[in-house]
Amino acid sequence: MNLPQTYARTEADQTVAVTMTVNGSEVTMSLPARVTLSDALRDHLGLTGTHVGCEHGICGMCTVLVDGEAARACLLFAVQLDGAEITTVEGLGRQDDLHPLQESFGKHHGLQCGFCTPGFLMSSYDLLTHEPDVRREDLPEELSGVLCRCTGYRNIIDAVDEVAEAHRDGLPGPGNCGRRALVGRTPAGTSGSGAVPAEAAVVEEGSGHPDEIALPAGEPTIHIDVTSQLSSSPEDVARVLRDVRLLARCLPGAELTDELGDDWYRGRARISLGPIRLAFTGIAQVLEQSDERLQMNAQGKDTGGGGAQAGIVIVATPLGAGGTSLQAKADVFLTGRIAGFGRSLAGDVSRRMFADFARALDQAAAGEEPDVSARPPGAFTLLLSTLVERVRQRVRRVTGAQRGGSRSRRRGD
Image (cartoon, rainbow, N blue to C red; front, top):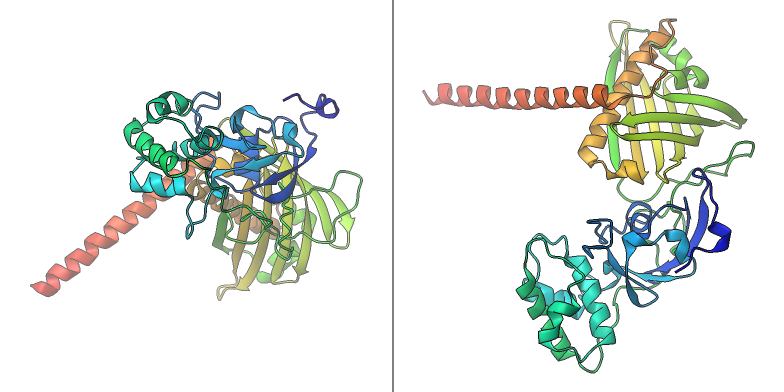
């Protein structure tokens, strides 16, 4: 495949619109030219059945069908496949109606850790579709393009051979392909046409704003619920909640760059996690703003193709001693590199950032300049504090269990 001439020169921060049919559903994505098909499937469409191993085209874990032919998803750029038809392991069969290959792999235990299984299933499907008369003795060579790290080849050969013997007249096609919305990346309120955005569409500098920010349906990548006690009075906290520019200065790494009118704002946020350095540009819409409550939706993307969308609610409640309880809730949906972090770790880091936000807001409410570094939050500070908090939680659980055991023994005595 040759890269189309129109995509031959694309800046690192530019994206290209790509339309393809994935498991029977037409999808349109806006992606940087360097995003591979495997990353587009996993990070932007939520089809994580396509596994990524060596990323050099050797292990075969990422095998999919491109226009009916087996291909390595890690070796193809998504922009090369405009107009192509892609079939992944998710399209092979359904849980209540497995494809014969899936049934046979289960019957013969043609898997151990399961990491290579999607690659073997798609490679086997390609083989039996094009060579239905393949002989058992030829299967080891024919399937050698996919590596099993558990060395469970004997059972894999048994599984494929049984299907080959049963379907010499033709292998059934994929049983889970059809026009539908792909799970996890379809915005709420859209129809099931299968048109799926790769990430939040961010309005470029100098333009207006969309009608709304529609958060994806389904479970968020991270759910945050953090409550902090502030020493400032509810009246002083309310003053900050009504000043969006001041509020933005309280969030580590964030900067408000433009007011678009009608409660719409443009800004950017930076974060550094070890070797991963992300610079998000995006927009936010304030849905509700009062002395006690602020609700907004936001979305952004970074130059590496990652995306983030969030629904945020901040509630301030008076405390008896004159202070304020500040509760921050957020449902965060991630795609791209940042989505590669484990949910638990990403959630811990996000909660740490909201705790820092609460401290900075308390300072702003007291009339001080928020003490937020101009530099993005670093890995050492965020991860170290996260690990310390995990150790504290572990100690509290162990201590609680020990105390419970001591009380039980005393009652027994």
